[in-house]
Image (cartoon, rainbow, N blue to C red):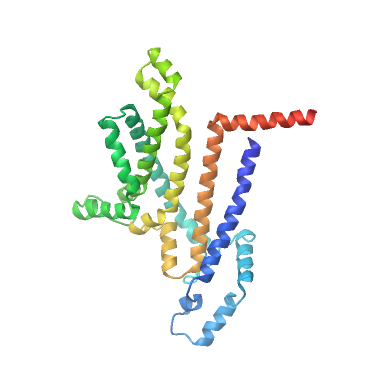
Length: 321
């Protein structure tokens, strides 16, 4: 198991390196001049040229890339914003907790609603309790997240006036963003849970548990659901990663000053170092989430445990021979 963890950790290195090179290359070839973004359009030509030389923008692409990678991976510094001069690391670390709060609560709502819906649909296969949640889930998967967020604002903020449309404050400011961020996850988890539960409910051990006279609730939640959770864990990991990855839309629509909102503003202002730093942090969070998902899968899936146990035994036999 330790080798599996080490292997997964090592796989993060090329992913992070690849993301760093890719986002730097994209920002390098994006049209626009950072010197113009900093000095404005009223400066003299020599001032633009002096600033480009000072910032190293006249250096070849490979020189700038190596300098940036040294700055990130050796000096652990994401640089400073072109527009404000503030450290990007400071800006992102100050905004990251809001992004994490939004993501975590969205996942909790997705799990708390999506899994019970899927279980109920599987238990009532072919009935109203099945097709109604699955119809809602189909709309949830097909519906664009930004459109749902705008509709929630239109209905609950503008029409009914129940909840604030944007900004930061008490718990009421988080309700619409969390609903918007979790709806796709609810739909995805409900569909996957139903599929897994239908497969498990037809198993011999479930039939035996029912034949012994166990209550149906015990059969479903103590015997069937734990065995159906293995494929659901994978979906849960991708759902969590997706919520963090697409959080920029939710944060922008509801004006939540998180990492996604900071990145969108940086793109609009051509603040290239801020964009690079934001994408890199999101990539790290995404990679860590997928790593944790793989580790949880390895912990609960006996097939993975057996695979590494058999490798260890075969290695010992070879050494003994």
